[in-house]
Image (tube, rainbow, N blue to C red; front, side):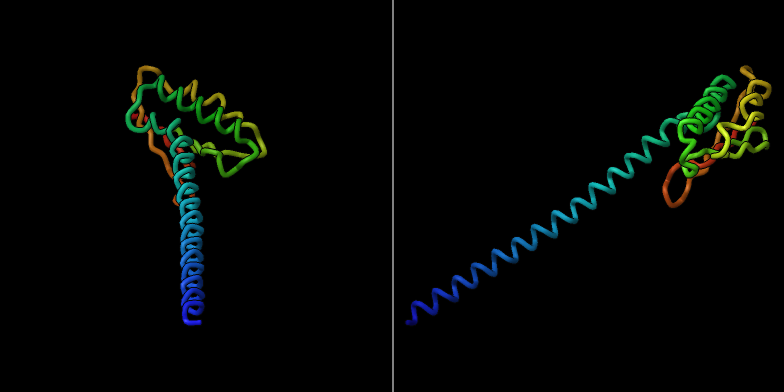
Length: 142
């Protein structure tokens, strides 16, 4: 009888140990899934911003025109997602991204008149503190 009760106690302890190990594995898998999601989000933000951040700092007129074209194409591609639109300021004139228009007419023609190949420009970006995505670009002549 003593052996049977000890066997039941041992069996209960083994089942309890298996339950605790299983619970630990479940918590670990859930936590690693969250960490993978965080890494994927930061990689998506980096990939999104990388296209534009290569122009940050002092650039030539040709590079400023290339940046303008990249932003214009980006805004056209993301016309349905206003949160992904990038507001462009060139020489103090702001061209707000407008989800109802493809691109404002003035913004399409302005850079050809103002961004000169022989000039040097300073490029800065504003980043949304919540998402980390670039939301605005400022191009000013140096």
